[in-house]
Image 1 (cartoon, rainbow, N blue to C red):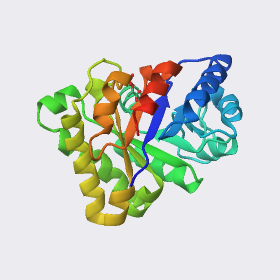
Image 2: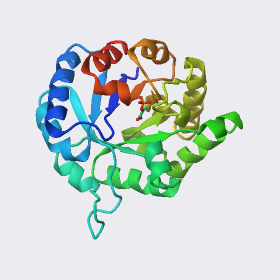
Image 3: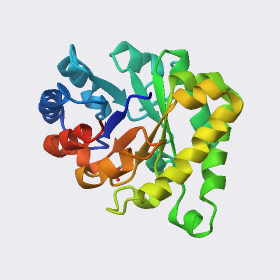
Image 4: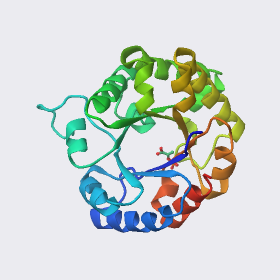
Length: 249
Ligand code: PEP
């Protein structure tokens, strides 16, 4: 049985004091939550968020990282640095990174491997654009994004990773994929991993992301291959996020 994971991607929101206050609120809701809980604050708040979450079930993720361990990469942080400040997870391949910063499948795969080499758990984000969905390319696009990582890091690496299916057309738009639309893609992802290793395919957590709200979470999380959510906007409000977590029983 896979335990659900609810992750909050705070994007470029929250100062450090706001982030600490939000972690404190989330901790209260996390006490009785049936799921694992993860928050991904901006880089400036990671140290404070880790300190605030200490001793609680709330884990902390970075939203991004560089694949090199160190070097002349102005403005970047490495997996080793994230591990050093107490992050447990890191998002890789979020569609905003792919679209706004031109991150390719190959770059995402390098980040995925670099994260694992430092003991961080990568959350690999995949998902199609509206144009790709309307062109019936969803399964091909998501397969390609997943295979780019599988090809270089191998299926065993998914024993210590999370996958997040996030249709680009549903992110920040208020438009959620229907449970059936999401389930179709989640089932394909799991089948692809299971085809290489049945045990890992059965264990890997596949989150859904894209305008998840308390009102839509329960129906989505009831689908057999949806193991929780990657939540953007709704994770910035402690009460809404707590209700999403509570619905993940
Ligand atoms: C996200 O940023 O990963 C996301 C799913 O955002 P939202 O929930 O706001 O659509």
